[in-house]
Length: 325
View 1: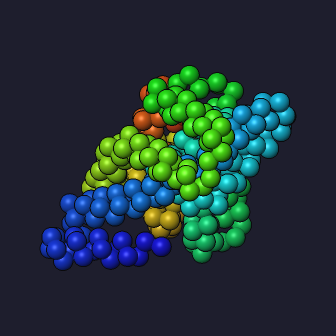
View 2: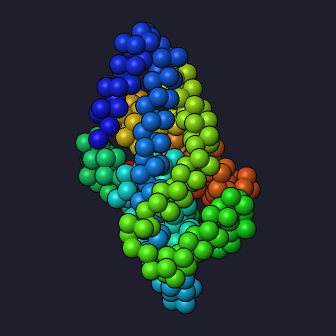
View 3: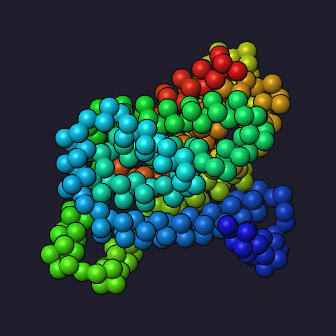
């Protein structure tokens, strides 16, 4: 899908700038250029698409349905499964997070999607089967969905809506006003497009600085932290290897497809699979770049609670993995 962008980045870094390959600065710059363009394009597409969906979305009806009908946790499972089929990294999942909140979806259900989307997708599943086999892949997918579901339910119980930033609160107010205008004026699709595009541009302008800073941090981590740096802390003899692996993964940044080959190397070096997968989950579901982007939509307290709950769930799943496999 992004082969053209890979070629462009290679040409820009190696041919135009004539930087030396396998150099820390070169790798960091290559990562920054590629991911910046990719994520900004995805952001524009997703925000515009969600704008179209939300313009027709019966916000009040959905909110009323979810508040009046007991689904016994099924809504969290559905959100997590939707996360599985959406191939987005943690940073590009945030616009969908905004779209869900705008659409009246409860915050905990939205969190279930936000956790699962970067963690489990069809590309990661395909690589997982090739590297570790069908049994391990099934356990990984089920644990990823359960992680999103359980964490979402916990976060919903904490009633965290008050910790959304004023910027998001304003977006939510505008969403209801816009839908009232659409309905009162009976606007057709063509008439709605300029308003949707303007709203998309407003959201993009608000989050772009956070995206750039987040990717820059990710690029520095990608270029300057060697892959074998953390192996000494994740040996099978260390009882605390799983929580250590999860916590030290946070400064790093990658998608599931990019980190899976590293996981294979760690396992080949004798590190337990559950510990290695906890490390992968920490990198993919928790990262400084994601925290930077979430800062636009969540208060620091909410980010802390979100990261804390997800970290705890990852650690538990890591120990379970080590017991099963």
